[in-house]
Length: 565
Ligand code: NOJ
Ligand code: CA
Image (cartoon, rainbow, N blue to C red):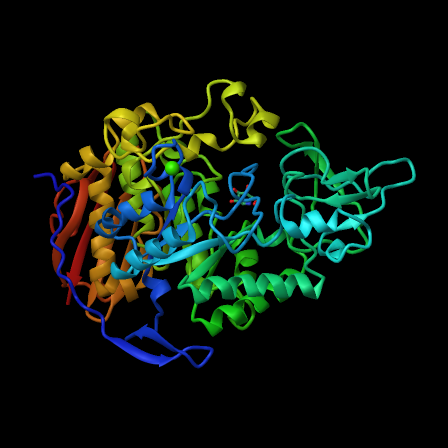
């Protein structure tokens, strides 16, 4: 008999203790000393694309509020909303023109308070996105800054004279194409922008900037926000002497020479700023998540701070760039798990091709999506999902350059089509506009909405949605998946990746076939202390039943069982 996505989980309530947090405030820790954010499943929402309540084709806060029951039912404990503050929308909200208000396109402050209150009722926390590196060029600070060389806010941004020949101050490049310097003819200086020219970099060396940014976080904490996802943290500081970056071999996606960004990224001062933001967060028992792009795990580790005094949750963005295989994942998780920090796993977001599209083989696409859920949602650590991932939403990339909305997609077309593809409307139904809006959606709905949508998948016990929901139920109710250690087993198997999550006299055995062929797996769990344990299958897809200590898995199948001594 083949075991399908069937659940036999027994809810267990974790004992909660009240102990003082860093600021002396009361914070809830569980019996093993874990705060809420170590257990929580975070769910990233791109507000433009989640649910449109007023049918203008753009998602909004009331739309999100109307879907909180859906999120609760799925198993989300916290929502991280990408920026919903006033913005000219050049970078779809990552160009903020007022940090302490809501963009009318998304609603009002009253709508935000309602979303926050309704979330609280359901025990869902709200996390905002804090764009720390830059503002919009329409922010009042920048408008003043560019008004004259002696303006009060002049030194809030990075202004410099150009070279004698009218060239920019140095060779730094914007990650969105062209130079990182824009000339202002009125004041005859250049300003620095790592992203679009409409996103001037703040000067974090100016104490007034630091204070204003810290105060912004206080403003939202006082309004009930539980933390922030900090945008682009590694770009906060630049070398004051503006040294040229070394040119290295190769070309980037815009056809420019590659450079080693050693003088405008990951400067040591970043850590001082993060410590400051953390100090304020601790006053409110809040959590800081980092958009932490790193080249390896040891670099990622630095973001926790030497004394765990920087980010509680720096995202592991390395996982999504690894080749899909049992061996690479086993190696990576081993490195993450032993690094000393609390791991934060992510497989997709609004800046990278959706996981469904990235991992698909054209034949077992849904099976692979289920396998990935069974994998990263059973690891020790915090998980951050992206909207629609639980449905198997795919990328729906623009078909022509004229259709592109994301400016970077126009510049890098056709090498890179920009980020529109991963930001398309949430697929609620198989009906008009996937149930996202009655109006014209700002980005085209993916054709996959016909099959991969909430209404259809909620009814199907074997859908990708059902696998996500079942794994999340286990994660919320089983102490071994919450508290258990991680021990990988059968380490030489190149196809089937297996591990235990052990806690006291219980363990979960997770068996994942990362290959496109049927594979056997055999277990001897005596060295791990679970030789003669009672076995109970709790969730599986594409797997046979365990015969003694032997099981076979179909291509990309998975099997999860509970062991009790
Ligand atoms: C990272 C964000 O995730 C991305 O969407 C944005 O364009 C840049 N930072 C600039 O804010
Ligand atoms: Ca709307």
